Length: 96
Length: 303
Image 1 (cartoon, rainbow over the protein chains, first blue to last red):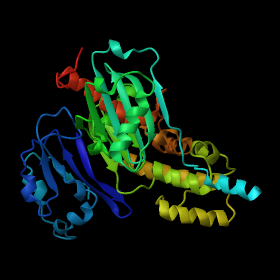
Image 2 (image 1 turned 120 degrees about the vertical axis):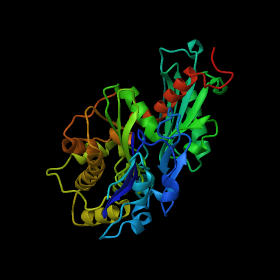
Image 3 (image 1 turned 180 degrees about the vertical axis):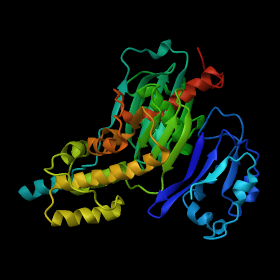
Image 4 (image 1 turned 135 degrees about the vertical axis):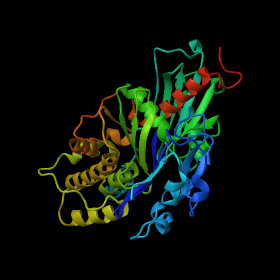
C-alpha cells in the first residue's frame, strides 16, 4: 500500500509516501529525521490484517510537513534527504 | 402576526439532513453465528452498522453531537431501535472515523481509510478500484483491490473546504434545504464560473457579495458546487482514477457537486441502493466479522 501522508494547499503538494509493501518496520528512519517526522507502530491502522510493524508519519506532523521538512530542503545544492538515505528498502519518497 | 411567522421561518435549520435507521426485513439475528458492529463517528455524522454473519442487519445514521462517546452510543441505540437484538449480544465492535478512539464499546479501532475501502467494496461490489469519500470535514481518495484492501490513499484533512460541513453552512446561508441543493443548483440559465475559494469563510463572504450584485440563489449555489467539485477533483487527480469509481459519504447524495465532478473525472460513478453514508461503519463491521472468523472475537462470542 502507498500511504500518502501530508496535504495539498495553494502553495503546493506536500506528501511523504511510505510504501508499506517495502517497509519492514525496522525503524531506521525514526532517528534519521531531525524533525522527528516518523514513528513505527506495531499495528498499521490502515491495514488491520498486517502483522508486521510499519513506519508512519506522526499524526500532528502530517499537517505541517512543508515546515517540518524545510530544513532538509534548501533551494540549491540539496543533499540527499536523511530519511530517504536511511531507508535501505527505499520505501520513503517525497512529493516535493 | 406575519412578523412572527417570518421569525419562525428564519429559525428553520436548512442544513439538517435526513437521519435514518433501517432493518433488513429478511433477516433474523437469532440465526446468526456472529453479530458484529461497526461504529463510524465522523466529524458531522455518526453511523452504526450491525451485521449478522457479514450481512447488514440494521443500521442507524445520525448527526454527531458535541460528545463522541455519546454520539457512538446514540447511533447504536438508534440502529437497535428497529430490532429486539440486545446490545450485549454483539461479538465484536470496531470504532472508526474521526472520533474512533472515543467509541466506548469498541474492542479496537481501525482508520476510516481501511474501512471506507472495505465498505465501498461491500456496498458497490468488488469491481470498485477507486473510492472517493467526501465526508463532513475531509476528503479521502482511496485506491483498492478486488478484496477492498487499500493500495494507495490520499486524505485531505487540513481544512473543511470542499466538504459536507461547508455545504451545510452554505445551505443555511442561502436558505436552501440541504436535500434540495443539488437540484436547485442546476436551475440556472447559464453555468456560472466557480467561486474563487472553497474556504467556507471566504466563500461565504464572496457569496454574500454575489447576492448583492444580483445573482440568484441558484447561481450562487451552482458556483459553490462547481468550486467544491474542482477542489475534490484536484485531490482525485493526484492519486489517479481507475474504473470503477465509487463515491461514499454524504456528498454522494448531492447531485450539484457529483454531476459537476464526474465530467472532470471522465467516468460514471457506480450506483447503489445503500445509504452512501454507512460505508465506513459497514467496512468496520466487516473487519469485525473477519476477525471473529479468525477466532479473535470476544470470548463469549459464537453460537
